[in-house]
Length: 119
Image (cartoon, rainbow, N blue to C red; front, top):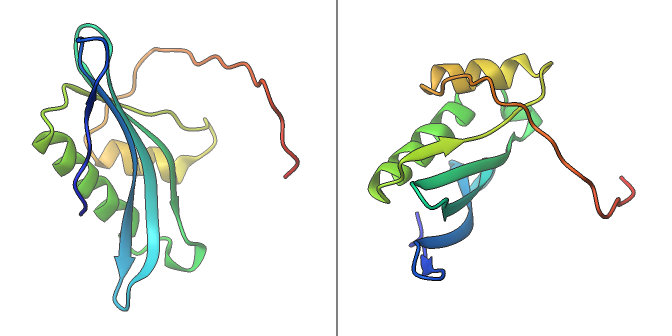
């Protein structure tokens, strides 16, 4: 895994964003996620987003391996809290996160889309 560059912002901590990728033999990227690290004034937080596994590799443990790598990295970086969200109907993702030791919270999620791109 490559080194992570942490930048102190206004003396309260650091922020960084990077992609973590798991590759199959031969170097084929099969599972990845985006991680953002920031300090919220009380704790160092890692936000995990856009977790995905290439369709033909799903159900083979690649996303589980990805989560293990991300959790190891978070431990090495002395992260206090890891957060993520998923759609309510994405049962495979929910099983992955439950199995990775993540805990469900009672938080609600809001967003405002400022720019909408065609799919």
